[in-house]
Length: 441
Image (tube, rainbow, N blue to C red):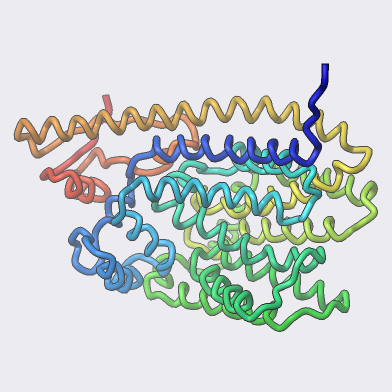
């Protein structure tokens, strides 16, 4: 009997496609099982008039008022108000695509061998799924995704050309690419504080390494971070940003914030411990040191993304997302190189053990997302039933998600004391009732 053999290249392509499909289906399911919550309701309305936004051009005056009243993240909140104006499935599909792009960038920023690409892609997804705090807020919640997931992808895309140049994979040469790189730099700077500062910090480190190594680089690599700084100044210059986000900068507050940053990094300390082990192994077993240097730069970026919050007025878990992304990228870079050494068997055994942890978290997470979806839909149906019966002051039962994977976890679903406050008033306006208040059974 004749045997048909699939060539190695085709097998790798099939494996890569299978991983992409798996990640896409998981995230697509999670996105479609996530409803509006918290700030989503208030961002449906104009910050200038307080009325529901009905057209694209109404977003611009709303964002002008947003800079005065809320914060300077105009890029992310412009996207949020745009998506809230469009049919919701558009956001869910695009948000899934952006998450997949994030995983791809994390797995490819080090330029590891393509023969390991499916494995590294899966590892990147697993590490972020398990260790990213407030996963649902960052990747599923509409307003949260626009602030954290999308800004992370912009920052990774900005860092990528520096890594590619350092590893001699590619270089930005054409004028159109240079213009796009500078535009990306500005939007990266204007997206989110921690991701912007980290991207600028990593770019500066890479430029310093180029200079110390005597490597000549094109001027666009110097100019793009200046555009990023311009974007950051544009964001931080908003009146509300200065009033609401920065701490009072006393020694006492900085000390308290430093301890808070240490406590936050403890939540994903496994990524730091893994990096330390992999870095030592790479130092001894990998002759080519460029990937080790790049991974150290990414890890320093992870520390920057965490400790920059020392200067913030508060540090919610969702703000740690880019620190996790950077450490995951540093770990994946080293894993890709160590797979070609005698450490390969140890790495695969470790991965097999970690696969058990990931599988548990995957099932627990998806189940919690589904449970929250059911609870929220039951409450939406209750609102509609009350409206049909002429009851316009609605009481809804509260519920508690059991994991970080539900977008509602850590957010204020409803106030149980008064209906005339956030987010109850925005939610009641959206559903067309006089008031909504929560209660615990």
